[in-house]
Length: 406
Picture 1 (cartoon, rainbow, N blue to C red):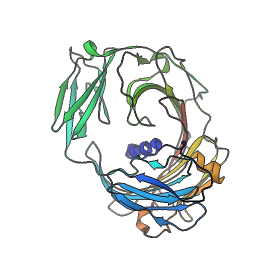
Picture 2: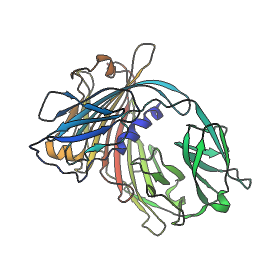
Picture 3: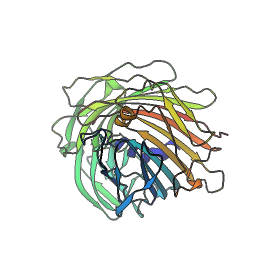
Picture 4: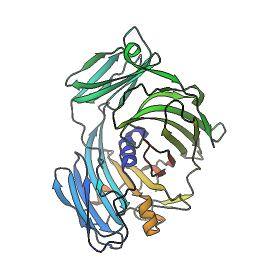
């Protein structure tokens, strides 16, 4: 079930948190543009942090809105979609996102804020690596498939780049058009760039039977998370391989190395703490991956009123995110997602240490909020504000799967 929230975590991780767009107290209103993506937006409201009144954003295009703010501000977006995954699973999703930002953050939010309806039909894709190769990986769209496999990747119609790794080589084949099922033959060993040994060491790691440590090397494609990356080498940090600069990448592609540690802290409920670190990497770069300290202590409340979370001693450069996933008690099993996120700039400008969902704004339907008696997951998350193409990025999270609450 955790995979169902991949789009949500990926989208929020992709949101830039700080920039050089100018900030501080403003005497006149500044226009901020919100690009929601091709989604069904039911509500898009905003308010200045100093103003308790919510206002409707102005729609200026099919998936574009503008709002005028004078200082730190909040955005709330509600989407209600019948989301069809690449595996053809239909899910009725109601998503509420509340973002705290400032005029020091970029004035354009240009990442999709809602999952949107995946266009059907979805077409299957299979890759023949050539030369009788029967092991490897390929990525076509957002599907990464290891072969041999009975499962093909599934994508909607469009044009894609294919990433394939096998026999110690990595090959990128550009601009493959998909308008029907596809079987593509490529010569990875003959035409791909060589992969070389890249043994890494991980520092600041924990130990114990409840700790799982892994590392990976991947090609990322303009995203700030690993959900859409092509992880062609993963597992034991000392046994990884990496591409050489011989691999031809576009301006929005880059190679990173990452380490992730997951610690199970179950005590009657399922709880997992995760620490991750990733940075740009090419052979010859330092091979040490240093995990960040665990997420500082956080509190959350979900029973008396809308959900809230508070924190202590969170590093100044971390975006804070609180996610509540709930399922309805009726036969429809609608999934409700409520996300609260504040940028480092917002935290610095306001001194806020607690965030709470707001549902009392004009136009907000009571049925959009997560059902308090059927909470599935709570997740508090922090990530440093950096571009992984050029700078190391650290993230920490604390996830609780609670089952029935209330």
